[in-house]
Image (cartoon, rainbow, N blue to C red):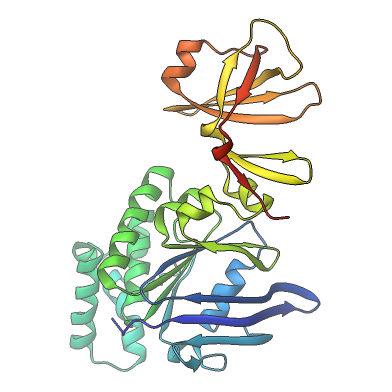
Length: 328
């Protein structure tokens, strides 16, 4: 692979007519990082990825690869490679020709390009499928071929646009493990767009949460989950309750809240409104007389031991240290 290089955005702006898709964001991604751009639909994450790749014009600002401004460079000259959401494999070419296609465009002879393509196919464990066509492959196999084709040019940065979204849940978990292992093996930067919180937390060294064209928080998965910067992060990343106390708001993890059945009513009692079995955990939705909702995650053994039921009066409690202050 090409030597890893740092990537930096300086006041990066993207507008579509009067609509601002990416609003003057600043970010530095160190070389060799697995970075996930996370956010809801329309937050600007895919526009950002496409500007890095050179598939979208930059309205204003700069993208630097190491010390070089790449704004005006064509995609092939940037040292990046993009794996598209729909994989974009050529249906009339077999796997080895799909992977070797970029080398064919560069007029590299057939023997050499097949040699390079075979190395990459072995890397993604698809060497035995070299002669098959995309229509003869499963979704996971197609993804591996698309990944191999993206790596054949030896990029310093690999760009992935929701690469796991078309896969079933079981295969998605398997493939994210393979992506993480491959990134560590290659030592290059992966920038991965996703709207899945679970996917971003599992894969990334750096999670960049975007909303309405801005970066709400850029941090490690641990800090994004345990120390959300504001109410949007706490709600979007999930597994938190946002509690207002005077002028301040706090995030409290659902699994840090203790729930106890009350035999007599009090001013602070709540009622169990919904119960959702999630395997090893059970999610309980409670509400008070003002219809304010709180969510609790309890271990399945604790749930069945206490025999929690709909309509029960309960009390919720948590340690002060479990409350994280949110910015306004």
